[in-house]
Length: 154
Image 1 (spheres, rainbow, N blue to C red):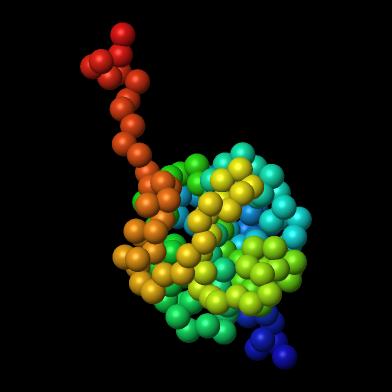
Image 2: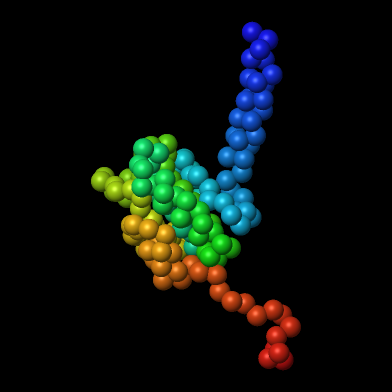
């Protein structure tokens, strides 16, 4: 019994750390993360915000979803910092989110872009380049910004 004591404590600590990270979903400061949305309340809060956001609908049972999730997460460096990236696992999330966003029949992985609570893009992608092109065409790419000390500012 004592053989498993320290290990089970470390697992408990690790799970507590993971849970505390999961509860910080409203913080979009991270430049390299996407946030899981599971409750209808979280989804409604995102729709109420006056901003763009990108969402991937996925399933833990879908092989191609796992590959596309890596491509999706890699987009963080190319997507505007003020545009949160979300993930909705249709097997874990409130069914009402999926019904509202996808309808009765859903194919995954599916991607959507919202602006001010309205869906402005809905697409599937079969590879990293196709996903990147769709997201950038929707206007979510990072824009070049001149510093405040521009040569032309008067």
